[in-house]
Length: 399
Ligand SMILES: [Zn+2]
Image (cartoon, rainbow, N blue to C red; front, side, top):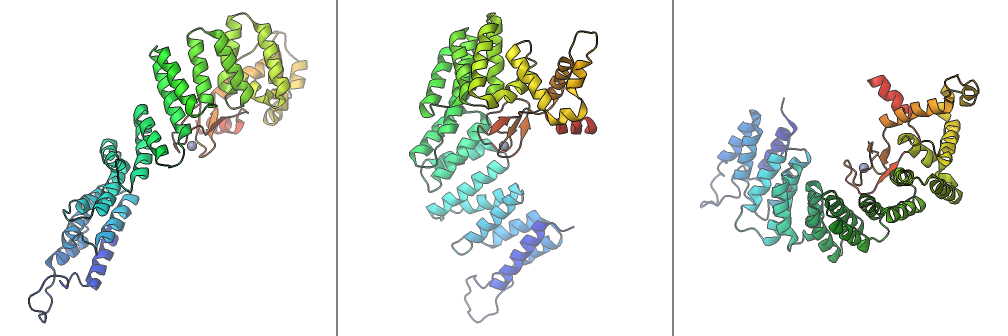
């Protein structure tokens, strides 16, 4: 079966024939009146196409149609077509052929290099792409685009220092603000330093993150984790409380930490008081508190248990399966209420369903990911606030 590329090249060869190249119209001829010679490369190229040898046909096309002011746009168009179709090797061959011309104008060389670097990126050849983009980022009309793509490469390679540098250069150039990304790059460095035990460096990185974006919640969460790991419970609690007070989406991360610290210190009464105050201020967060408690199997704290009971009674899908109120009244002799049994079952179900979902692309995961692995956006995940029964059922059916 002839491939689409064969048709593509065949169309180009036909266009060339129409334009007169094949008849050697653009070749220099001594005798103006002599009939134009038939271009032998044209025939060879056609022969390769007829035999479905696309690469050889492409080589002959490149040999036959020199890169010059008249043809360069055709070469670029062909290269980007091949890249878009996923035929990256062919795109690379075309763009390398363009930049190999010694008499190329500087602007066209930069365009060729930019296209070639994008081919490398598409092929996953990150080192080569990085090297060409770095050259273009040092001064060309592709400076801003090259820096943006470099940031993406450094994110993939987890080269956070380089990502910060590229991001800061972009901001100087007046591109879009990268304060959010740069704050995350610093937080990545802070987390790495903290896990290596260098807490002083970790704190400094968090400060740098917060200098560019003072209210970054990841900065506060990272700083709180550092305080927890260095047994500075007072600072840790202050920060974790600030996090659950200021936003909803990190409750699932901060609440288990708060519970762990108070329980370790035997201060359950203080915990009770703090959570009562939180729920009095934000009554709408009760279901998130309940869901977090279910997922993390947190029980035995009256204010949290109340939220969980209410959550279970209000859960419409659960209500279709069991009448909790009725069950509880007919509790068996084992001393366990129906609430506790159902709650334990819910914990198991919740552990098998995604807890976070990207608001941009829908990618879901069990743990919080600051950068979505699918759409590569930062801070787009939000926690689920309900056990996703449909996902559980789907899971059970397909497994
Ligand atoms: Zn996403």
